[in-house]
Image (cartoon, rainbow, N blue to C red; front, side):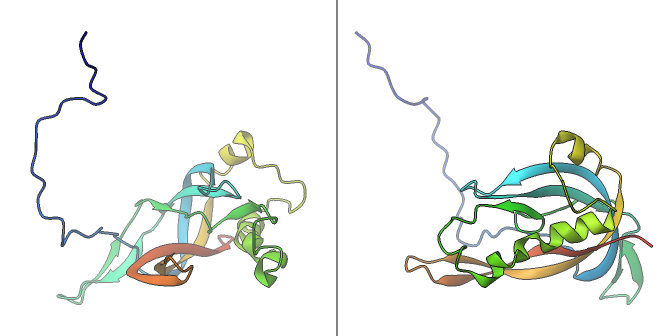
Length: 180
């Protein structure tokens, strides 16, 4: 009887030295009042499935003015380049029974809902009776809105539960406002 191998037989490949490999994050410049168009909209949940938020793909309509450090020339860059919201950018639901949330002033004051509310106000969406579903998400596509971009330090909890700075940054979208 033949013995079954629990994996595919693969030719051996020696992997290059990974010591100095770092993720290239290509962050957008920090800016306020960036005019964007919503290209895609979906619902997303965190890995523990206790936070629900919008996952938007937004695209700068006119781009961002950037000064070339060598020539000093001002250029419009990032026109129609995708920017994606992260899990905490547009939270619309959170399980308040999760440890620590019921006692947290920030969570009890519904601060996790502020940017979602700002988005709804900017898009003239009534603030009562919102039901996030496929139709609601589809109605966001093509809408233009102003948003700000900021950079935040990436952290993770160590084995003692203390936040540790990872030395990298992520971009966050906030300050959703109506296009005048």
